[in-house]
Image 1 (cartoon, helix red, strand yellow):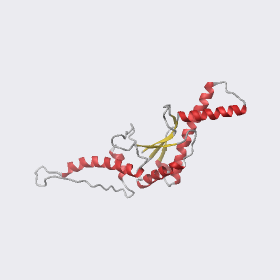
Image 2 (cartoon, rainbow, N blue to C red):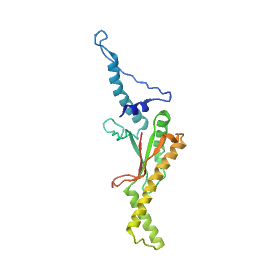
Image 3 (cartoon, rainbow, N blue to C red):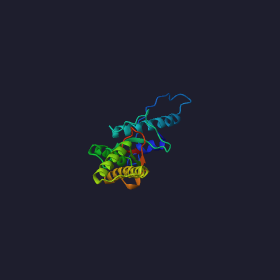
Image 4 (cartoon, helix red, strand yellow):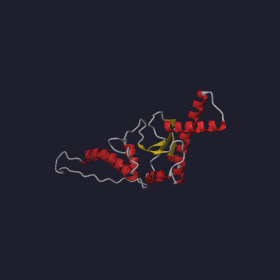
Length: 204
């Protein structure tokens, strides 16, 4: 974890950080110096404390927040568990209300943090929309004879679905009192992985 990110996670609303660092050494040794030791320990302690704080606050939605598994992206963003949707659905289920509450608590307690929201549509969404379109076509007795046009229209629907999911989550966080300037939307994407879930990816 980048040190600036760890600092942002640990600063409370008074801009303070509290850590306990056990030190051991011989005060009578001529080469004894506390500053190098403090500097070294701080870098380690801050990162571990930041992971610990996030993991504890976001449980049980913190499966990616371990020192061993957490992968920082090229921009230095810290990934959080995604908010998962049902295929073809852009509204948040009641099962996710607790996760949204924890996210809003995190952002309220740590005012230096910003959250990135990236809406994703999946192959399960594609299958859902295809079935929906087929049912509509059968009901109206019309056929689309241009597969390319049909595919483009479907991709457009998937992009819009991904975008709406991110906006829905953003609006929920705004309603919880989080300032708009701290919430950033990514360009909506279609996940080509057959096992990919309909979701909004989140990162700090």
